[in-house]
Image 1 (tube, helix red, strand yellow):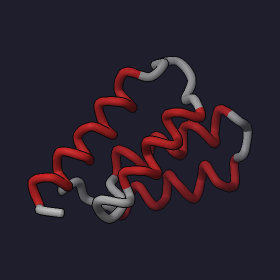
Image 2 (cartoon, helix red, strand yellow):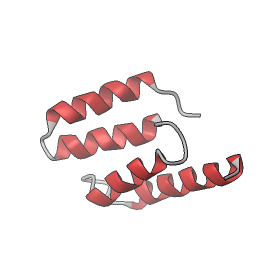
Image 3 (spheres, one colour):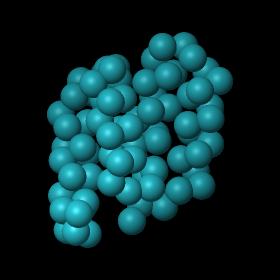
Image 4 (cartoon, one colour):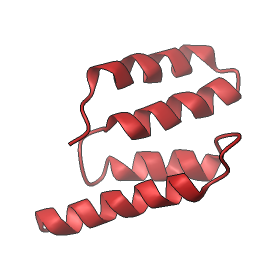
Length: 76
């Protein structure tokens, strides 16, 4: 898969996440965030959404892990 195709797939995952419910993170949001990892190393916008999902589910250990990971990543 070319670099451009990977970028297109990551962009599609991001658009899918953006159009999901803005109030609470859904399981579909979580799936698209993880799917983005198939095309690129974890990116901050996705790990942050993963943290939100776990926070909404009151799974604070995983939420904290995801938020901490987010602070160490760059979007590129």
